[in-house]
Length: 493
Image (cartoon, rainbow, N blue to C red; front, side, top):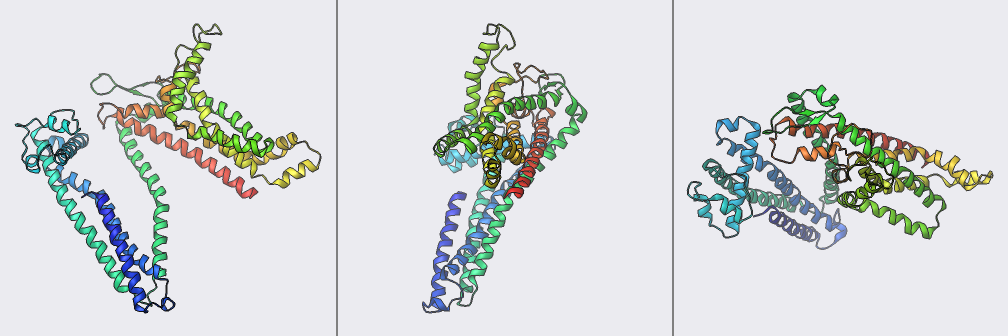
């Protein structure tokens, strides 16, 4: 039975509890609602929340912990040379889970019976053909140990699922029964419901904090592991990026400086494009445009923010890159050879700048409109023209908020990936020429985590170090931007 089906069973039980508790509350006062402490619906909600809340918490906790327990049980059957190496153990357990899922799919699709799956032997059956038939691909043949552990994994998972169903339904029924027994005319159902809703809101508010904490911890631990295997000075101050994965021979140069240079360089080009265009469009829409023009132009500008970044990347690769090559290439219109290929920092920067225009424009427009109208009227009343009012009154008053908007756009540019992958190339370079291929931190994070490299090698773990460094940079920009914006809003609200 799937977790979704169990979820709907719990919801159905909660609905029954709602109806039963509400009916009991009315029955205790013979239908006279005025004699109840709370409205009848609160008694029903109390029973529904009492049943659904603990049961769903148990369901989520069980789904999180069960794979960990199963991995621990299965790992005890791995050979010692594999179990002692964390990387090899992870790969072996991944193979066990894939085989187990493949056997489950084969049984579900009727390819084999449950008895065949339980009695299958690696030496007598081509497991790969059976798994391929149900869409599970393996990188190598299934050895007897892996197949045996996969069968054990299925057995343990089956027992765990049965216990899960029993435990969740039992908890839901027990809690609904307790809430039903507590339902009397003097029971303060409203207070209990409001407290439960308050806890729900606190849990929802905690999700963002806990998610951020989880991301930071995962990056920190893997970054520490990387720095224990690769010199920190060579990483932070190295000027060459030449990773060499296992099997290719040679050492790796994992210098961070070429990547952060490419990131900042491309982001700078993007901001040079986005800031003037976005700011000028915001000034026009806020101070000069009529209501009709504003109602049409503002949504059209904001449409740019909804375009997927992969589309921007294709636009950079297929349109902007060849166009720049026609102008700055060997046989270009200017007769100079500044650009040798369509992928370059300028290509990605220009397209990224177009993507950032709505970020700068919308935020700046809201900030300019937040400037009190009295400041405009006072300036115009003293004889200043509208342009002088914009330059000498509105923009200085809105400057802190505009700076915050620019910093937020900068953090968005630093974290962009797809436009860089398709438009800037893959060369880690410290060049000042914007028409040469460059790459960024985010692009290399993607490349380092894809492929056949060992997960615990420095060449793979470096992706977490890059992510941690980039996280610190963007977090700092966001904190500065939010501080400036909040300070501005406190001043003019």
